[in-house]
Image (cartoon, rainbow, N blue to C red; front, side):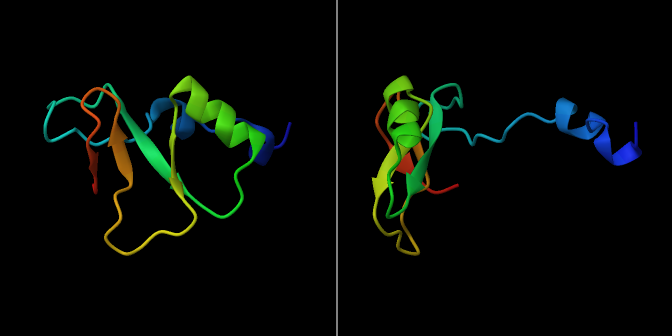
Length: 77
């Protein structure tokens, strides 16, 4: 086995980043908001499971990129 074929140990240690909601003060219910023109079946399934929130077609500079499922607040990092 070549070194580049081995799974990285660094990726196994690192958890995905989720900011803390400013209202609830927890990051347990925070999911990313996904923007884009094409919405696939995979994205719709992830939204149904509560892993992401679909934000729309285009994203402006000051558009929120995180959503709290507990209180419904949308915010920037």
